[in-house]
Structure formats: C-alpha cells, structure tokens
Length: 116
Ligand SMILES: *[C@@H]1O[C@H](CO)[C@@H](O)[C@H](O)[C@H]1NC(C)=O
Figure 1 (cartoon, rainbow, N blue to C red):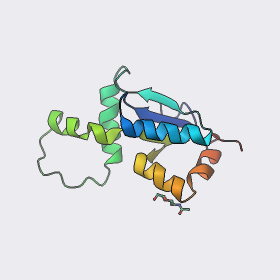
Figure 2 (figure 1 turned 60 degrees about the vertical axis):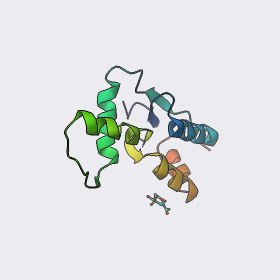
Figure 3 (figure 1 turned 120 degrees about the vertical axis):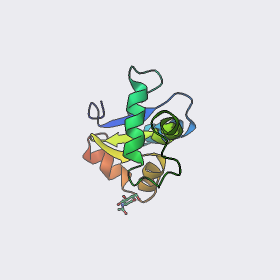
C-alpha cells in the first residue's frame, strides 16, 4: 500500500495531526494517497504495524502488558504516518522538521511527487 503512490499518508478520520499533514502536502502541491485506517479493511492491523515502525527506539514502556492495552495506547502514535517513495518518512514531527529545514521538497521531487 505504501509504495502504491509517491506519497502515501496513513490517517484516521478525525485525527487533527493527520489533517495538518494532509494540508501541508496539499499546500506544497502534492496529492497524497490517503488511507483512512478506521475505514480500511485490516486498518487496525496496519495501525499496529505503523505504531511499531514509528516507535522504533521504543522508550521503555512502564507496563509491558501485551497486545490490546498497549496497542490501543499506541494507536494515536501510529498516525499520521507518511511514506515518500515507498519509504517511511515519519510522523507529523518528522514531516514538519523536514519541511522547516528544506529537505522535504527535494525528497518529494526525488520521489516524483513534485515536478516543479
Ligand atoms: C532535516 O531534518 C530531518 C529531520 O530531523 C533530518 O532527517 C534531515 O537530515 C535534515 N536535513 C537537512 C538538510 O538538514
């Protein structure tokens, strides 16, 4: 799914930061493919995978209670997840910092999401 388009955003409807990221990309002239995970078949599983990817250096979780509870707690950390050129760029903070230091646009051009 992530490599199906130059820019893919995994989102859930009603997620404020997802909206921010989508608006930023649209403002740059990118038309991202957006998956609303609360409306996708298997969206919950995808969200769990994204949460793991995004929390790679996982801050030692106080309670290693398995699956359901921790997964639910991680749900908000999973979105938005932005993929550029089939590779995970990151969440809203990563996208914003790349935007601010000017590395986002070259990245988007490289991925073929922008032509100008
Ligand atoms: C811009 O910031 C991002 C995220 O912190 C970093 O990965 C990237 O290397 C930086 N690029 C430049 C050109 O400083």
